[in-house]
Every structure is written in C-alpha cells, then in structure tokens.
Length: 247
Ligand code: ADP
Ligand code: MG
Image 1 (cartoon, rainbow, N blue to C red):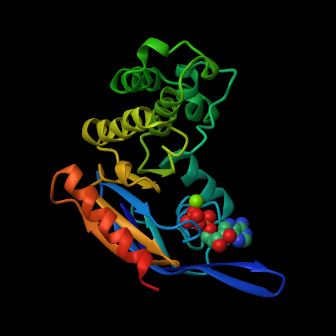
Image 2: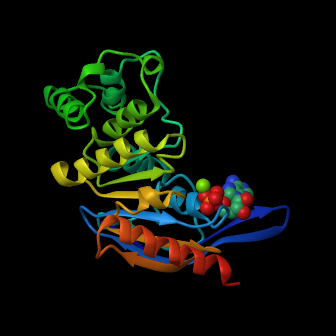
C-alpha cells in the first residue's frame, strides 16, 4: 500500500542544508494500523508531509498503491491528495459553518457532486463511530473527541488508499483519545482502512499492529504487536527508553 525507500529530505536555510530524513525505509500493508513515534524534531511530521505530497524530497522513493510520487507534476499530486489520501490533523480542521454530517461530506462537495452513495457512506460512518446523534450539530456544539471522530469520518469519505494522521489524539483527554483510536480500529475492521499515524502517545500507539520508532531522521526500531495491548505498551516504553539513553 505504502512503500518508502531511502527517503532523504533536508531543509535549506541561507546556503546551509539541514538533513532531517536520512534514508528512511518502511512499508505499510493494506489494512494495517501503523504508528510512528520518536522524539520531538526527529522528523515525524516531515515524513508525513513527504508522503502527503505536501513537500518535495531530494532522494528516495515513495510509492502509494503502486504509484511512484517522484516526478509527478503539481496537478497529479493534488489529485492524489484529494482522491487517494485521507487526512486527520491534531486540530481537527473542521469547518465551523457546516454540520457534522456536512463536514464529513466536504471532500465530495469539493469534487463537485455528492452522490447518493456518498451520503449513504456518510451515514454509515456516523453510525460506525457513534456520532449519528450529533449529525446535525455544529463543531462548536460538540466535544473534542466527537470533533476528531468527525474528522476521521471525513478522512474516509473518499475511501482513500491510506489515512495519514499527525498527532490525532494530541489535543484530547484519555477518554476522547480512546474513542478516536476505536474509530480507527473500526475503520480498519469494517472498511479495510489502512492507517499511518504519528503520535507521541504510547497508549494510543499500543493499539496499533506495528510501531516504527524514529530517531534523528532514521528508523531506530520497528516493533510488531504479538502480545496483548498492555504488554505491547510496556515493550514500547522500554524501547523508547533505550532509544533515549543511547547517544
Ligand atoms: P517532529 O514532527 O518529529 O517533531 P519535524 O518533522 O516537524 O519533527 O521537524 C524535524 C526537524 O526539521 C526539526 O529540527 C525542525 O525544526 C525542522 N523543520 C521542520 N519543518 C521545517 C521547515 N519548514 N523549514 C525548516 N526546518 C524545518
Ligand atoms: Mg510533528
């Protein structure tokens, strides 16, 4: 589904170049729920933005559903963004003047038409994520967890190849975080969704099938969940501790 090989990205400042991603290799399979963790500044958002077609990268390969990103023009990249990717951000990014149900349909409205099928999928998502009772409320009238579940539903309305989420639980209390993680799990189970999530929260990450640890722009370790959630979280925390004590 997602294939990243030897990805390198630097930022320029004056005539200096600061390497941020220094040869990242990773893959995400269809219907996998994968988290990326790592210290602040390790390049997590930069990695996500490269995969999102938001920023260019110098070296390496990114393939999404078999399609290579390098060499595509702006128009093709915009089409991939709109049709093949779903996004969930830390601060929801909902439109205040639209209801929950209308917000979920926004990506279809942008494409020019809202079909019967799209409306049916919106209603299915509302029910799957337990937010049908607030379908006609506005973002200001609902909780943070409900806003983020609305954003997850919106990210799925185009049936994307993959959902890219940057700190989706970053602004939520633990109960709301769990509701959002459950929404991802439901999307995976019932809609075959594939999710790639950046998080600093080991609790949220412990629900994933696999966790990729990033350090200084490289993959430090990849942990696959083979045990129950709470033991996986313990193993995760041990690996993060080891990563932070190694220089
Ligand atoms: P993370 O999400 O893991 O905290 P980022 O990918 O946001 O890390 O940032 C990695 C490094 O790249 C940091 O040192 C940050 O200061 C730098 N950086 C991020 N975005 C830019 C930018 N647009 N221009 C220059 N430097 C940037
Ligand atoms: Mg970040």
